[in-house]
Each structure stands twice: as structure tokens, then as C-alpha cells.
Length: 436
Image (cartoon, rainbow, N blue to C red; front, side):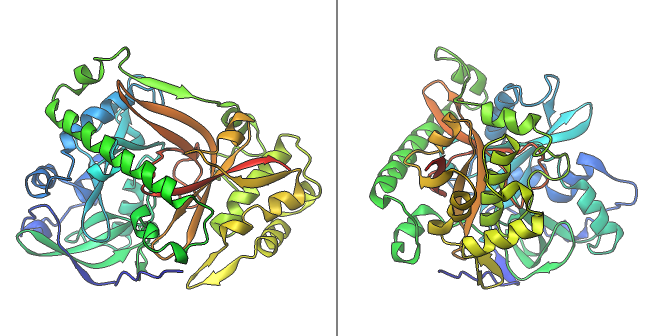
């Protein structure tokens, strides 16, 4: 496996022009809370505008991104009278490149969720995530109240295996650059030695021998090359129509199309009290692999599929057996399992098995009202597995893309799961749960 170490202290050359006075802002946080406070801490309109001016051809104008996110807001995922906050919160990667615009969704003045727009044209589509994550104002307030952040300190969100984020503590010393003096866990305030990053398909393609993945590399590369070409054409047309995106997208037969292939699996999750929990979206059986496999078994048991002895075990016994059967091993500071062992426990306790999907989503699983599993890979070489319970195709006019609804082990701020755009550059494999 590969190991990319991101050092605690490094210079982050940002693509925006940063003010020398940023460290002198000296926030007064004593009586502040909510989304206004969060945006004041984590973003600024001047920074967003400078990203467009200095960021190069690949940076998406935040106002263009907002137009698409406003269209997405009409999808019905949030209450009809919901609106977007005026400006987004920026999320950077570990190299200092802008990656995401997080637009908070407001209802009656309160943040109720997030629509995430692409800030990098590499993604090839304008909207990447939609979830009920209301933001980080409470976590930020706690950090300030407990003196884990100073009111004079500038911080920004940093990709830590998105949708998980960390805080980057910034010491601005130059007119157009920032220096991260370290990374901070946004919930605990603990220092982080490194942040997690997903690798791109291109990087994995050039190092195929390092990854034990059942994948047709050449077919995937061909799909990605086509995706990039379509994305380039899309952004060219989008930029030409900035300011009138709603009109631009309505030129076809319909302004918005949403084709959810099968929601029965999601409906079963929502209505089954054994599975649907307000504060615990899925039972955590340790690492992400056992958690994903355990979710599949819990789903089968809760919906009266025969699962042998699984439903009679307590959580500790389930975890022990998952780790043993899936051959989970220590890898650096974490734990991992190879994709070839992903389905071992599912096969042991049920009449089902796990097979690789040739589709961009676990089509057989969803068609049969069963969950599937998605695989992404961290830069450290770790495989990251998430349960998938629904699929849909979204977009406008000639351009559309698939989304999957996932439960992420690390994303506990969206108890109903997150809609995530399937981007072939960063997603590697889906797995179907099928009868033996």
C-alpha cells in the first residue's frame, strides 16, 4: 500500500489574494452563534472574489456555483421556502487548492443542511453533495469557549476525506499566500499529524500493482476520459451563460430531471426502527469495511431476510466476527481489509454474497431493494467503504450525472445519509449484494 505523509507544518500557497490584516481581525465570539458566526469565521466574500481573479482556469466562479445550487434547492430535498446563505464556506485540499463551496441551506433563518458546489472544474459537474449537515457553528463556538482556538486566529476548512473536514490554522505572512501552522480536529480541538485525502484514478492507474482491486482499468480510464471531455464542454457552456443559468438549463424539454431508479431500499431504511436512528445512522463495527458489511447484515435481519445467527449476537460479538472473517489488519495508525474479503461475513451469515458491479452504482442491489457498497481509496492506500441505499440520475438538459445515497462511517452530521455525485475520477468500484 502507498503512504503519502502530509506534514503538520507546511506552506499552503493559496490561489486567492489574502489580506495581511487577516490575523488582526480579532473576532469577538462571546455572543455569536449560528450560521452568521460560522461564515464569519470560515469565509469571506473578498476571498471568494479573489479566488476567481487569481485562481486560474480550473476554478469555478462561486457565483456561478451558487446559481446551480439554487436550482438544486428546487429538487424538494428541503422545505419549499428554504434559501441559500448569501456566500459559501470554502473547503481547500491539503495542497492549497480550492475544492468545494459549501452553501448552507436556511429555513426560518436556521441552517438545516448543505448543498456542496464544485469549486474545481475537474469534477465535471456543478453539484457534488446534498445533505442535512447544518454546519459547524457549535463545534467552532466550543473551540473558542475552551480556548482551543484564539479569536485572533484565522482558520479554514480543509478536506480530511470529504465530507469529513478538519480546520487548517493559518498564519498569513504574504500578500497572496497562507501558511498552515497545523491541522485541528474540528470536534475535539486535537492537533492532527496529517489529513486524509482521496487519490485520483489517474494516480492509481499509474500504480495499478499497488492496489488489490477487481476493476477493468482500461474500461474505467476510457470512461473517465469521456467524462473529462464532457465536463470541459459543460463548463464552457455554463460560463458563457453565467447570470442566466436557470434560463440556460430550461432550453431542453425540462429544466430538471431526476430519475430515482428504486427507492424501496431507502424507504425500508427510513421506516424500520431497528435501522433508522436519529443520533446513530449506522452501527459502527470498528473500521469502515466491517461497518459497511455489518450494515448490510443488519438491513437483511431487520427486514426479515434469513441471517442465520447474526441477529442473535450482541454488537461486540458481531464486531469480533466481522474482523476475523474479513481478515482486518493493522495498517499504520488505522485498520484495513482487502476488497476480496469484503463479502466474507455477508456470505457466512446470509444467503447473499458480494460481487463487483460493472455499473457506476450497485445496480443489482438497488433493483432488488437491497443495499450495496461503494469503494473509494485514500492517499494512504486505505480502502474506504460506504453502504449505498439509493441511486438517481440528475442534471439539466443535455448534461446529467448519477448520484448515490451513502452512509459514511465518518459523516455523522447527516442522519438521513448524503446524496453524493458519482465521480469516476475519485470512485473506484461498487459492489452488489446478490443471492448466492
